[in-house]
Length: 284
Image (cartoon, rainbow, N blue to C red; front, side, top):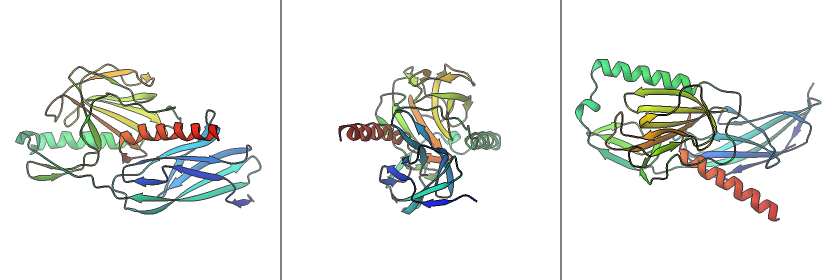
């Protein structure tokens, strides 16, 4: 029978207070004899692994934009070579975000869909849902995440959208301003799992970064990769365009972590925070 050691490992979260649509880095330290370790948040399990650079066990999880503001519990459970179980919990407060509202006017045929187009849209939605439910038990991402283009934000994450006076779904990515033809870069290492032309998002590329983390690049003028390609951080995967339901050249950049809809810019910030924390520790 496995033993149980309460608070046998030390757990930290970055940031200490999270927001709807945010990303959290969990960092744990414990005995060197650990053979398995994982985390749990909001009823979902997420993987943790040893980071040789920081010398900590680390994992990422996302906080869906619809998560109710409250204090939740992060739990980390580990087992050593003698099957002794270690666990530790940490509270995490999730704060409400005022995402704002955007009002748009688009051509009626792009909003009021005929039966044939609606069926296409529903098929594409089911395809994406199945894709995001696929879990690659391999961590491909490493180091910091980068912005795929350097443009300013034209439409922020989570905006409530009213299109032609109709309430529509929230904006689950960020729109970055860029001229047509601008190279679009992979935000981190990953495998190309989708190259397609979709009704709403036009020419689209999706990368699987492993451990349930996906990034999306929509409205491209062209894709320069094919499904199955393994990309490095900064690899050019396509060029900015205005395909699909778009009013001008820009990049829609999105992210999912185990189906949680998160702000992709939070991935960039969590990497910066991790590096800063490591630097301050080294100075102590």
